[in-house]
Image (cartoon, rainbow, N blue to C red; front, top):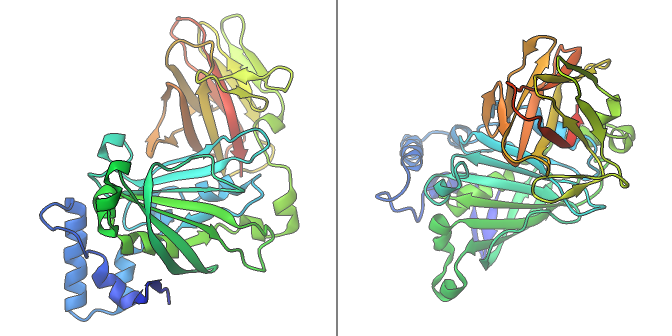
Length: 381
C-alpha cells in the first residue's frame, strides 16, 4: 500500500482518493478536474472499494498510445529509466531525449496532458512533466520555494521527495504549499534501485505539475516503474546501442544530382541551427527534388526514437517523411500521429518498425533549395 507522509500527517490509499481535490476552488478549477472530482465523490459516497477509486485514476501509460517509447529510450542508457504507470487520465503529449554536455548521457523528458502544448496552457490546464537523468538532468527547473519533504512508497521502495512550489522570488514570503495548485509543484528525488536490477544507479528524477493537487502529484510518483529492459541481463545493460548510424551508410535515391550522407565526427562535427556542435549522429543533405535515404533492417526492430534538427546552414523549416518502399509511414511527434513533419528547430519522433524490412527518411522538395537535416540521436529497439 502506498503511503504519503508529511510532518506526521499520512495519506493512505483510501484517504488519498478523497484528498485529490482538496484545496481546489471548484469555481476556478479546469473542467477536467471538476469532472474527475465529482466522479471520485460519487464513488466514495457510494462506498466503492478503494481499488475501484484508484483504478479510475491510474490509467496505464500504455493507454496513451505509446507503449514502447520508454523501453526504446532505455536502449543505450546506463541508468534505469522509469515510466509513469499512473497518469491521472492525462495522455502523453511529448517525449524526447535531451542532449547533455560532452561525456554525459542523454536525459529523458516527457509531458502528459495539454498544459505544455502550447506553453501558454501551463497553469490553466492539468498536466505534468517528468525528467530523468544520471548523474544529473540536462534540464533545470525554474525558481521555486521548498515547502517540505514527503515520503512516498514506490515499486522500488520508499523515497524521500523534496517538494517545492514555483514562486516569483519577490513573493516567496507569501508562497505556501497550497500555492502549488496555481503556480505548479516541483518534486525532486533520487530513485532507489532493486538488488535484482543490473543497472545499479540512482536515477535523478523531477516532476513538475500544472493545475494538479499535491496528492495527485505524489500519486504519479508512487506509480513510477522501471521499464525493465536494463534488468533482463548484463548483456542488455552493456551492449552497444543500436542506432541508424550503426546500420551503415544508407542508399540515396533522387532524380536530381547530389544528395549526401555525412556522419558527424570529432574532427568534422555537425552544427545545428541553435549553434550546438555534435560529434555523433549524421547529416542528410537533400537535393532540389525528393531525396530518400534508405536503410535495410536485417534485424526485427519494433521502434525507432530519433531527434531531428535543422542544420546551421538552413534558413527555414524542412519537411521530413518516413517510408518503407513507396508506402508512407505515419509516426508520432509532439503527441500527434502525422505523415509529415516540418522541422523548425528540433523535434523528437517515434516510428513503429514492426514488420518492416527497410526504412527511408525522405526529404521532399518541390524544386526549392536543398535542405540539410541533422539526426542528432537515433535509437532502435
